[in-house]
Image (tube, rainbow, N blue to C red; front, side):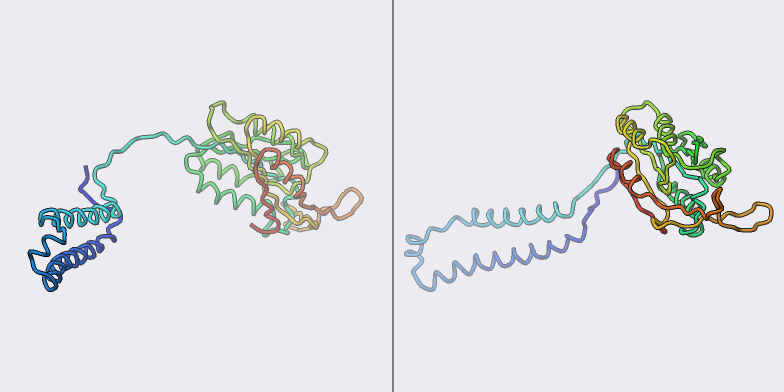
Length: 283
C-alpha cells in the first residue's frame, strides 16, 4: 500500500477561499444581529424577527464549510493504495507485403522507392512492440521471407536483404502476396489482422480485387501505401559488377517508365475497410 497522495494537488489553494468565506459568513452573522438592534427594541425584535437558535446557525456554517472542503478534495483526487494486475497483451498480426520489382528502383523517391519503403518499415517496427509481423516480398511471384514473428531483430535482417533478387520472376502481380498474407495469419479469434501493402500499384494481369474481397471476408484489412509519381519515372539500373548505371529499357529499346496506380490501391483498401496512403514521392 502506498501513502495517501493527490493526483491534482494544485487545487489545494482553494482552501484559502473557503477560509475567507468562513470569515465573511461569521462577520455577516454578527453584523446582522447588531444592525437590527439599532432599529428596534430587543423585545420587539424577538417578536417580529424569527431568528434560528445559535446552534442551528453555527451548524449551517459548519455544513457550508464542509461542503466546500469536500468539493475541493474531490477536485484534488485523493488516491491511496494500488494493486498490480497482470493482464496479457493481445497484439495484432500484421503481414507486410513489400514490392521488390524493378519498378521500385525508380528514384522519384530518394534514394529509391524500395530503399525508402524499407527505411520506413524499419522505423515502424519500433512502434509495434507486442505485435507479430511477417514479411512477404513480391514481384511477378510472392515469397514469404518471414512468417509472423515477434522477433523484430530477425525481421530487420531479412528486410535489409530484400530486393529484386529475392523473387525469381519479374513484373508485378498483387494478387498472390495478398492471398499468401491472408493464409499466413493464425486462427486465434479476436485479434486484429492487417496487411500492409507497399507498392507502386502496377499490376500485370492478376486479380487483386478478388483477393481483396476474400481478405475482407476473413476480417482482414488492407492498408495500401503507394510509392512513386503518378506521372511516371524512369528506372535506373546499376550493374553489380561495374557499378555503371543505365535506364531500364524494354525489348524494343524504349525507356521503361513506372507510374503509381493510386486508383487500384485505393480500391483494394476500400474493399477491406482499410485505408490508402499516397506516399507519392515522399513520406
